[in-house]
Image (cartoon, rainbow, N blue to C red):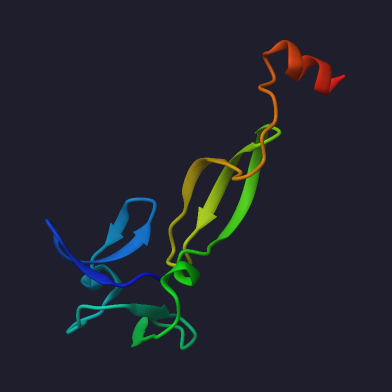
Length: 109
């Protein structure tokens, strides 16, 4: 989980995908600013510092709602904090023709 940052709403936990939650929304108080990980293993939310790479914290459980075309998916993304985001995601490094084009129709057949 990403860290605690200052935001116009005050101190918030950045969930990624431009979504934020305040520590008080999770029943947390006196949360320091910095790179923290949210831990739910004790059946309640706690935070602890981490030295791991930030990219790791932006890895979420997701379920494919539908395949839009060969390189685009509609995903339900769960940031493990009791919320989910529905996002259209393009797969990096994969280039397939759009379905509505002549190339896409050939690829589909």
